[in-house]
Length: 328
Ligand code: TYM
Image 1 (cartoon, protein in one colour):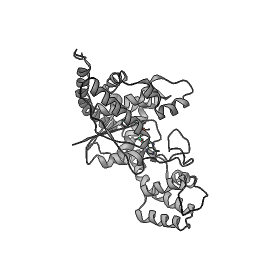
Image 2: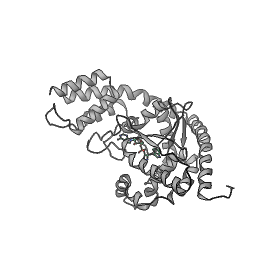
Image 3: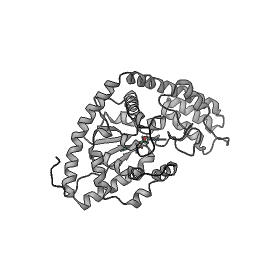
Image 4: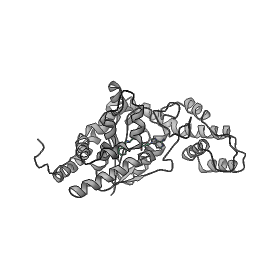
Protein backbone atom coordinates (compact mmCIF):
# COMPACT_ATOMS: atom_id res chain seq x y z
CA UNK A 1 0.00 0.00 0.00
CA UNK A 2 1.35 3.43 -0.90
CA UNK A 3 2.02 5.78 1.98
CA UNK A 4 0.57 9.29 2.23
CA UNK A 5 1.99 12.05 4.43
CA UNK A 6 1.00 15.64 4.99
CA UNK A 7 1.37 18.37 7.58
CA UNK A 8 -0.34 21.51 8.81
CA UNK A 9 0.88 24.29 11.09
CA UNK A 10 -0.76 24.97 14.47
CA UNK A 11 -0.79 28.72 13.94
CA UNK A 12 -4.47 29.34 14.71
CA UNK A 13 -7.34 30.27 12.43
CA UNK A 14 -7.47 27.15 10.31
CA UNK A 15 -9.52 28.32 7.34
CA UNK A 16 -11.57 26.98 4.45
CA UNK A 17 -8.52 27.25 2.17
CA UNK A 18 -6.71 24.70 4.38
CA UNK A 19 -9.87 22.63 4.54
CA UNK A 20 -10.71 22.56 0.84
CA UNK A 21 -7.13 22.50 -0.43
CA UNK A 22 -5.84 19.84 1.95
CA UNK A 23 -7.77 18.54 4.98
CA UNK A 24 -10.83 17.38 3.09
CA UNK A 25 -8.61 15.41 0.76
CA UNK A 26 -6.83 13.81 3.75
CA UNK A 27 -10.19 12.56 4.98
CA UNK A 28 -10.81 10.84 1.61
CA UNK A 29 -7.30 9.45 1.39
CA UNK A 30 -7.30 7.82 4.83
CA UNK A 31 -9.60 5.12 3.43
CA UNK A 32 -7.43 4.34 0.42
CA UNK A 33 -3.86 4.57 1.68
CA UNK A 34 -1.68 4.09 4.70
CA UNK A 35 -1.66 7.67 5.95
CA UNK A 36 0.18 9.87 8.41
CA UNK A 37 -0.95 13.42 9.18
CA UNK A 38 1.19 15.68 11.28
CA UNK A 39 0.68 18.86 13.28
CA UNK A 40 3.94 20.61 12.48
CA UNK A 41 4.73 22.63 15.60
CA UNK A 42 8.45 22.95 14.77
CA UNK A 43 7.42 24.77 11.60
CA UNK A 44 5.21 27.11 13.61
CA UNK A 45 8.20 28.57 15.49
CA UNK A 46 9.98 29.79 12.33
CA UNK A 47 8.16 33.12 12.63
CA UNK A 48 7.31 35.12 15.75
CA UNK A 49 4.91 33.15 17.94
CA UNK A 50 3.55 33.00 21.49
CA UNK A 51 5.14 30.09 23.42
CA UNK A 52 2.38 30.08 26.03
CA UNK A 53 -0.21 29.57 23.27
CA UNK A 54 1.60 26.85 21.29
CA UNK A 55 0.24 23.83 23.17
CA UNK A 56 -3.35 25.09 23.05
CA UNK A 57 -3.01 25.71 19.29
CA UNK A 58 -1.83 22.12 18.86
CA UNK A 59 -4.88 20.79 20.70
CA UNK A 60 -7.22 23.07 18.76
CA UNK A 61 -5.77 21.83 15.51
CA UNK A 62 -6.06 18.20 16.57
CA UNK A 63 -9.73 18.83 17.43
CA UNK A 64 -10.25 20.55 14.08
CA UNK A 65 -8.73 17.72 12.07
CA UNK A 66 -10.76 15.07 13.86
CA UNK A 67 -13.92 17.18 13.62
CA UNK A 68 -13.32 17.50 9.87
CA UNK A 69 -13.33 13.72 9.57
CA UNK A 70 -9.85 12.32 10.28
CA UNK A 71 -10.33 9.05 12.10
CA UNK A 72 -7.49 8.10 14.49
CA UNK A 73 -8.40 4.43 13.95
CA UNK A 74 -7.65 4.72 10.24
CA UNK A 75 -4.84 7.24 10.17
CA UNK A 76 -1.80 8.17 12.24
CA UNK A 77 -2.34 11.66 13.66
CA UNK A 78 0.57 13.09 15.63
CA UNK A 79 2.61 16.14 16.59
CA UNK A 80 5.95 16.74 14.88
CA UNK A 81 7.89 17.60 18.06
CA UNK A 82 6.89 14.22 19.57
CA UNK A 83 9.11 12.56 16.97
CA UNK A 84 12.51 14.23 17.41
CA UNK A 85 13.98 12.31 14.46
CA UNK A 86 12.37 14.89 12.15
CA UNK A 87 14.81 17.46 13.52
CA UNK A 88 17.73 15.05 13.36
CA UNK A 89 17.14 14.23 9.70
CA UNK A 90 16.77 17.95 9.02
CA UNK A 91 20.35 18.48 10.11
CA UNK A 92 21.63 15.77 7.77
CA UNK A 93 19.62 17.23 4.88
CA UNK A 94 20.74 20.78 5.73
CA UNK A 95 24.24 19.64 4.92
CA UNK A 96 23.28 18.66 1.36
CA UNK A 97 20.94 21.56 0.51
CA UNK A 98 22.18 24.69 -1.20
CA UNK A 99 21.56 28.06 0.40
CA UNK A 100 20.73 29.46 -3.05
CA UNK A 101 17.85 27.01 -3.51
CA UNK A 102 16.42 27.98 -0.10
CA UNK A 103 16.73 31.70 -0.79
CA UNK A 104 14.76 31.26 -4.01
CA UNK A 105 11.70 29.80 -2.27
CA UNK A 106 8.70 32.09 -2.81
CA UNK A 107 7.27 31.53 0.68
CA UNK A 108 10.62 32.30 2.29
CA UNK A 109 10.85 35.59 0.42
CA UNK A 110 7.29 36.55 1.35
CA UNK A 111 7.57 35.59 5.00
CA UNK A 112 11.04 37.09 5.41
CA UNK A 113 9.68 40.44 4.29
CA UNK A 114 7.06 40.36 7.07
CA UNK A 115 9.59 39.57 9.85
CA UNK A 116 10.25 43.06 11.11
CA UNK A 117 12.46 41.85 13.96
CA UNK A 118 14.92 40.11 11.58
CA UNK A 119 14.98 36.74 9.85
CA UNK A 120 16.23 33.67 11.70
CA UNK A 121 17.90 30.75 9.92
CA UNK A 122 14.96 28.48 10.80
CA UNK A 123 12.74 30.36 8.37
CA UNK A 124 15.13 29.72 5.52
CA UNK A 125 15.54 26.07 6.57
CA UNK A 126 11.80 25.55 6.79
CA UNK A 127 11.59 23.55 3.52
CA UNK A 128 14.40 21.24 4.69
CA UNK A 129 12.37 20.36 7.79
CA UNK A 130 9.39 19.76 5.51
CA UNK A 131 11.46 17.44 3.31
CA UNK A 132 12.46 15.52 6.44
CA UNK A 133 8.83 15.21 7.54
CA UNK A 134 7.95 13.54 4.27
CA UNK A 135 11.07 11.52 3.56
CA UNK A 136 11.47 10.10 7.06
CA UNK A 137 8.30 8.09 6.33
CA UNK A 138 9.34 7.39 2.73
CA UNK A 139 5.94 8.78 1.76
CA UNK A 140 5.12 8.61 -1.91
CA UNK A 141 2.08 10.90 -2.01
CA UNK A 142 1.68 14.31 -0.38
CA UNK A 143 -1.75 15.97 -0.47
CA UNK A 144 -1.26 19.76 -0.27
CA UNK A 145 -2.54 23.06 -1.65
CA UNK A 146 -0.71 24.51 -4.60
CA UNK A 147 1.40 26.90 -2.48
CA UNK A 148 3.44 23.88 -1.30
CA UNK A 149 4.39 22.60 -4.76
CA UNK A 150 7.70 24.42 -4.79
CA UNK A 151 8.62 22.93 -1.41
CA UNK A 152 7.80 19.48 -2.73
CA UNK A 153 10.05 19.99 -5.72
CA UNK A 154 12.84 20.79 -3.32
CA UNK A 155 11.97 17.67 -1.32
CA UNK A 156 12.41 15.58 -4.47
CA UNK A 157 15.69 17.34 -5.18
CA UNK A 158 16.96 16.54 -1.68
CA UNK A 159 15.92 12.87 -2.05
CA UNK A 160 17.71 12.66 -5.41
CA UNK A 161 20.86 14.27 -4.06
CA UNK A 162 20.95 12.03 -1.00
CA UNK A 163 20.42 8.89 -3.10
CA UNK A 164 23.14 9.83 -5.57
CA UNK A 165 25.70 11.03 -2.98
CA UNK A 166 25.27 8.13 -0.55
CA UNK A 167 22.90 5.29 -1.36
CA UNK A 168 19.35 4.80 -2.56
CA UNK A 169 17.24 5.38 0.57
CA UNK A 170 14.43 7.79 -0.32
CA UNK A 171 11.60 7.63 -2.89
CA UNK A 172 10.68 10.87 -4.67
CA UNK A 173 7.23 11.94 -3.41
CA UNK A 174 4.48 13.31 -5.67
CA UNK A 175 1.98 16.04 -4.75
CA UNK A 176 -1.77 15.37 -4.75
CA UNK A 177 -3.88 18.45 -5.46
CA UNK A 178 -7.63 18.94 -5.05
CA UNK A 179 -9.84 20.91 -7.43
CA UNK A 180 -9.72 23.72 -4.86
CA UNK A 181 -5.93 23.76 -4.57
CA UNK A 182 -5.79 27.54 -4.42
CA UNK A 183 -8.63 29.32 -2.67
CA UNK A 184 -8.23 33.07 -2.95
CA UNK A 185 -8.68 35.78 -0.29
CA UNK A 186 -12.29 36.94 0.00
CA UNK A 187 -11.26 40.58 0.31
CA UNK A 188 -8.56 40.45 -2.38
CA UNK A 189 -9.03 37.65 -4.91
CA UNK A 190 -5.61 38.23 -6.43
CA UNK A 191 -3.91 36.88 -3.24
CA UNK A 192 -4.42 33.46 -1.74
CA UNK A 193 -6.59 33.03 1.33
CA UNK A 194 -4.22 33.08 4.28
CA UNK A 195 -4.35 33.19 8.06
CA UNK A 196 -1.90 36.07 8.05
CA UNK A 197 -4.22 38.22 5.89
CA UNK A 198 -6.98 39.66 8.09
CA UNK A 199 -10.38 39.64 6.36
CA UNK A 200 -9.22 37.11 3.76
CA UNK A 201 -10.51 33.93 5.34
CA UNK A 202 -13.39 32.06 6.89
CA UNK A 203 -12.07 30.11 9.88
CA UNK A 204 -13.42 26.64 10.60
CA UNK A 205 -14.63 27.85 13.99
CA UNK A 206 -16.34 31.01 12.71
CA UNK A 207 -20.00 31.16 13.72
CA UNK A 208 -22.84 31.17 11.19
CA UNK A 209 -23.23 34.92 11.16
CA UNK A 210 -19.52 35.55 10.73
CA UNK A 211 -19.54 33.18 7.74
CA UNK A 212 -22.53 34.96 6.19
CA UNK A 213 -21.06 38.39 6.79
CA UNK A 214 -17.68 37.53 5.27
CA UNK A 215 -19.28 36.06 2.14
CA UNK A 216 -21.60 39.05 1.79
CA UNK A 217 -18.57 41.34 1.85
CA UNK A 218 -16.50 39.24 -0.58
CA UNK A 219 -15.11 41.17 -3.51
CA UNK A 220 -16.71 40.49 -6.90
CA UNK A 221 -16.12 42.43 -10.09
CA UNK A 222 -18.36 44.90 -11.86
CA UNK A 223 -17.44 43.65 -15.35
CA UNK A 224 -19.98 42.27 -17.83
CA UNK A 225 -20.99 38.61 -17.45
CA UNK A 226 -21.00 35.89 -20.07
CA UNK A 227 -17.28 35.86 -20.86
CA UNK A 228 -14.13 35.15 -18.87
CA UNK A 229 -14.84 35.46 -15.12
CA UNK A 230 -12.96 37.91 -12.95
CA UNK A 231 -10.96 36.40 -10.05
CA UNK A 232 -13.46 37.31 -7.30
CA UNK A 233 -16.42 35.67 -9.01
CA UNK A 234 -14.32 32.70 -10.04
CA UNK A 235 -13.35 32.20 -6.40
CA UNK A 236 -16.99 32.34 -5.27
CA UNK A 237 -17.83 29.70 -7.86
CA UNK A 238 -14.95 27.52 -6.66
CA UNK A 239 -16.36 27.76 -3.12
CA UNK A 240 -19.89 27.06 -4.28
CA UNK A 241 -18.65 23.98 -6.12
CA UNK A 242 -16.95 22.81 -2.94
CA UNK A 243 -19.94 23.30 -0.66
CA UNK A 244 -23.13 23.02 -2.75
CA UNK A 245 -24.91 20.46 -4.92
CA UNK A 246 -23.93 20.30 -8.56
CA UNK A 247 -27.37 21.40 -9.76
CA UNK A 248 -27.21 24.63 -7.83
CA UNK A 249 -23.74 25.35 -9.21
CA UNK A 250 -24.99 24.69 -12.74
CA UNK A 251 -27.96 27.00 -12.28
CA UNK A 252 -25.65 29.87 -11.28
CA UNK A 253 -23.26 29.07 -14.11
CA UNK A 254 -26.16 29.29 -16.56
CA UNK A 255 -27.23 32.60 -15.05
CA UNK A 256 -23.70 33.87 -15.48
CA UNK A 257 -23.61 32.75 -19.10
CA UNK A 258 -26.99 34.47 -19.75
CA UNK A 259 -25.73 37.61 -18.06
CA UNK A 260 -28.59 37.40 -15.54
CA UNK A 261 -26.62 36.48 -12.43
CA UNK A 262 -27.15 38.65 -9.36
CA UNK A 263 -24.06 38.46 -7.21
CA UNK A 264 -26.17 38.95 -4.06
CA UNK A 265 -28.07 35.73 -4.91
CA UNK A 266 -24.86 33.84 -5.58
CA UNK A 267 -23.45 35.01 -2.26
CA UNK A 268 -26.55 34.11 -0.33
CA UNK A 269 -26.66 30.60 -1.78
CA UNK A 270 -22.97 30.15 -1.09
CA UNK A 271 -23.32 31.42 2.49
CA UNK A 272 -26.12 28.95 3.23
CA UNK A 273 -24.24 26.03 1.67
CA UNK A 274 -21.09 26.93 3.62
CA UNK A 275 -23.00 27.28 6.90
CA UNK A 276 -24.72 23.92 6.37
CA UNK A 277 -21.37 22.24 5.74
CA UNK A 278 -19.30 23.99 8.39
CA UNK A 279 -21.68 24.23 11.38
CA UNK A 280 -21.45 20.52 12.33
CA UNK A 281 -17.66 20.63 12.07
CA UNK A 282 -17.52 23.65 14.36
CA UNK A 283 -19.79 22.00 16.92
CA UNK A 284 -17.62 18.92 16.93
CA UNK A 285 -14.47 21.02 17.42
CA UNK A 286 -15.93 22.44 20.63
CA UNK A 287 -17.05 19.01 21.84
CA UNK A 288 -13.59 17.56 21.29
CA UNK A 289 -11.85 20.52 22.89
CA UNK A 290 -13.82 19.90 26.06
CA UNK A 291 -11.87 16.65 26.44
CA UNK A 292 -8.22 17.64 26.05
CA UNK A 293 -6.94 14.45 27.72
CA UNK A 294 -8.58 12.35 25.04
CA UNK A 295 -6.96 14.49 22.32
CA UNK A 296 -3.56 14.13 23.99
CA UNK A 297 -3.97 10.36 24.14
CA UNK A 298 -4.79 10.15 20.45
CA UNK A 299 -1.76 12.28 19.58
CA UNK A 300 0.51 10.29 21.84
CA UNK A 301 -0.56 6.96 20.37
CA UNK A 302 -0.05 8.40 16.86
CA UNK A 303 3.43 9.63 17.76
CA UNK A 304 4.45 6.25 19.13
CA UNK A 305 3.59 4.57 15.86
CA UNK A 306 5.15 7.33 13.74
CA UNK A 307 8.33 7.32 15.80
CA UNK A 308 8.92 3.63 15.17
CA UNK A 309 8.78 4.22 11.42
CA UNK A 310 10.94 7.33 11.70
CA UNK A 311 13.62 5.55 13.71
CA UNK A 312 13.97 2.86 11.04
CA UNK A 313 14.60 5.41 8.30
CA UNK A 314 16.87 7.45 10.55
CA UNK A 315 19.06 4.43 11.16
CA UNK A 316 19.36 3.88 7.39
CA UNK A 317 20.16 7.53 6.72
CA UNK A 318 22.82 7.69 9.44
CA UNK A 319 24.43 4.51 8.18
CA UNK A 320 24.39 5.66 4.54
CA UNK A 321 26.10 8.94 5.49
CA UNK A 322 28.83 7.17 7.41
CA UNK A 323 27.72 7.43 11.05
CA UNK A 324 28.56 4.01 12.42
CA UNK A 325 28.47 4.61 16.18
CA UNK A 326 25.26 3.41 17.82
CA UNK A 327 22.88 5.96 19.28
CA UNK A 328 23.41 5.96 23.06
P1 TYM B 1 -0.03 25.29 6.08
O1 TYM B 1 -0.16 24.98 7.52
O2 TYM B 1 0.24 26.71 5.68
O3 TYM B 1 -1.34 24.85 5.31
C1 TYM B 1 -1.89 23.54 5.42
C2 TYM B 1 -2.42 23.08 4.08
O4 TYM B 1 -3.40 24.00 3.57
C3 TYM B 1 -3.08 24.35 2.23
N1 TYM B 1 -3.54 25.72 1.96
C4 TYM B 1 -4.38 26.06 0.96
N2 TYM B 1 -4.98 25.32 0.02
C5 TYM B 1 -5.79 25.98 -0.85
N3 TYM B 1 -6.00 27.32 -0.83
C6 TYM B 1 -5.42 28.10 0.12
N4 TYM B 1 -5.64 29.41 0.17
C7 TYM B 1 -4.56 27.46 1.08
N5 TYM B 1 -3.83 27.92 2.12
C8 TYM B 1 -3.22 26.83 2.65
C9 TYM B 1 -1.57 24.25 2.16
O5 TYM B 1 -1.11 24.11 0.83
C10 TYM B 1 -1.31 23.02 3.01
O6 TYM B 1 -1.45 21.85 2.24
N6 TYM B 1 4.54 23.80 4.89
C11 TYM B 1 3.21 23.33 5.15
C12 TYM B 1 3.13 22.35 6.30
C13 TYM B 1 4.02 21.15 6.18
C14 TYM B 1 3.88 20.07 5.30
C15 TYM B 1 4.94 19.17 5.59
C16 TYM B 1 2.97 19.77 4.28
C17 TYM B 1 5.11 20.90 6.96
N7 TYM B 1 5.67 19.70 6.62
C18 TYM B 1 5.11 17.98 4.89
C19 TYM B 1 3.15 18.56 3.59
C20 TYM B 1 4.20 17.69 3.89
C21 TYM B 1 2.35 24.53 5.50
O7 TYM B 1 2.83 25.52 5.93
O8 TYM B 1 1.04 24.32 5.40
